Amino acid sequence: MGTLHYGTSDETCFAIDDATLAHLAAIVVAKLRRQEAFLLSIDSDHGRESLWIHPASMLRWSYAPGEQPALDRDRLDAMMRHAHRPGGLSIAAAVPVAAIELAAA
Image 1 (cartoon, rainbow, N blue to C red):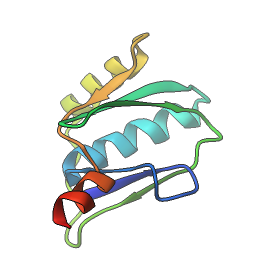
Image 2 (image 1 turned 90 degrees about the vertical axis):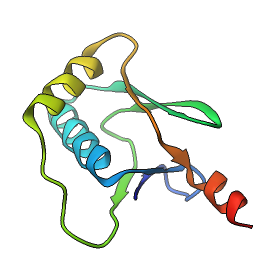
Image 3 (image 1 turned 30 degrees about the vertical axis):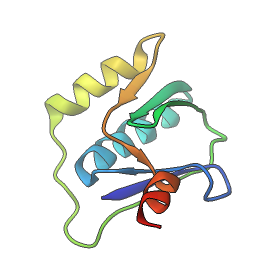
Image 4 (image 1 turned 90 degrees about the horizontal axis):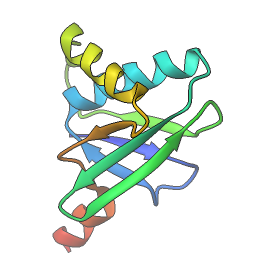
């Protein structure tokens, strides 16, 4: 499991499987290089959070130890098409890190 950190604090971060996170990172970098903002929605058992991704966004990705997952061109193309939609890109099966920490306590 990797983690997507949004903003300057660790309050907004999400555990996402490494393969999905690697694909998401590629999409975000491609869109931001073109100065294209978009909506990213992250669904989990705890609900949905939507993040506005734009060139000034503070983003950081951290991955589990090991090899970086290979990128799949078809998956990237599908994710990019979704990122261009008015509703933005949705990622499923992500868990807010705070929820993981609460469950472990």
